[in-house]
Length: 141
Length: 402
Image (cartoon, rainbow over all chains, first blue to last red; front, side, top):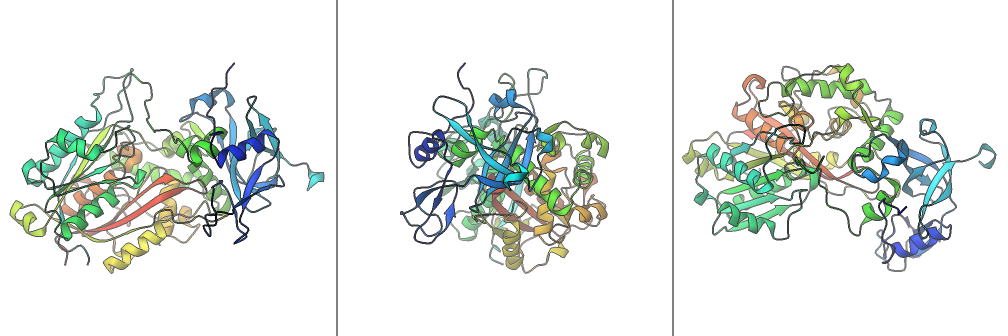
């Protein structure tokens, strides 16, 4: 069965680099050698100082849930109806950026703000793996 | 004040419609709504179409081609315009559009400017029919939608979750805003909802994106709106009740921080600019018409405008009578939650036109007694990092500006 959900642009930069890395199991954010800022979502320049020397760095893959919602109705993206209920969250990474993602591998009702999470990849097509997060085991903290 | 040579001289607002396969509510296309809105606005001001020499058009969410304002001018029959503009501020639209038009009149570029906003999110054959054009390249397509981010409902749900977790804001506090506005809508013949609801009905309305419920979500309707600006001299010739713009302020894309606060908006900065321009303090407003896509967005604006301390919006709405008869009348016509919001093209016109009505004394059985000045806000556009990006505040007052 073909994948009916929205696909990112994997043909043009900077998105192609980001999603290719996900395909290889790496979550990339960006860091600026000129002003030492980190940024997400990706751009081909540093939006803090304008430098075009922005570099990709691999995120550690740990963080905590800043805020979240449990989607109960697919009001704008009907292709997600089969996932309901599911959690969309902003996870704050150790590196200091917040990213939009899903919290998976747990009951949606057990998710809470501040919850420690770790990176896991969800391979949804041959070419696309989505960076998602799951509860971090207590021993890992 | 900067806008002393311009006044609002006419307004127009159509009935609201939510046509579907299951009802016989009327369907009109976008251009018909623009025409109806223009017709009512010109009639309200008592001017003919040939008197209009400027046009402002709010960009709709219903897809339109490039150069649309010019096409619309021909469709409506507006000739030899000395000034045409558009706004593209999503939910915030009406205020930046009307302020642009006011500046054109103030500077003499045009004498009589017609501002229009309309949208048709509901279609009788196309199911729910909500039309929001896709994002071909940006963060929404690439870094939000692959994760099933369900637009503003999901985004504002995360904002509300954060406000509840951080400050202890309750569903009942948010519901009190909605219940008050539903009662106001019963007194507004142009509102879609005409029956009041209680807190229990609000609380048990279906969960959409937890903690956002059905009655938290703005009500999509098809409708058109218009607002005519002209000089005080022309308004006097027309014999209309003028309303002036005492101050305005914007803050667009207020923050791009690494760790932006989900519970902070740009209304604080926009409001500060508007209050400074008007030389007025928040406590002299006779009513507030606060942009309402969700009650949580209203509550945060009450904090940012200085009516409540940061994080104290919940207790504030609990102890404050926000009804027409109360100490701080809020969204006296029902707001967009209960009147309806016409996509983004008609967004925040509900707030703006209700303020004009109140200041002209045309509020009927929802008239705020002796209303001399009031505050209007418009907010829109989803950010990646926290909540909304377009923020506008206008302070309107009865009569010609001094």
